[in-house]
Figure 1 (tube, rainbow, N blue to C red):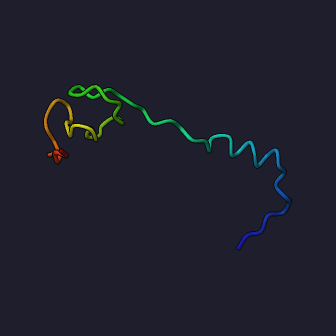
Figure 2 (cartoon, one colour; figure 1 turned 45 degrees about the horizontal axis):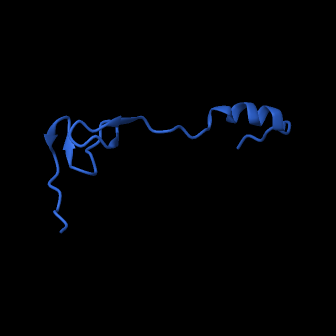
Amino acid sequence: MAHPKRKTSKTRRDKRRTHYKAVAPALGVCSNCGSAVKLHTVCGECGYYRGKLAVEQEVTA
């Protein structure tokens, strides 16, 4: 295996790592109930996706 010829400096290492960061997920609004929903995902509150029922929700009384 190849070995590095010189130690990678902290500056060079940190420059490479600048793109490794957490990104907030894109959120939209559910067209049925109005809750915040991750895009391209079924609503966890009501089970609707793009205006149509996708998942039956159990009724808790």
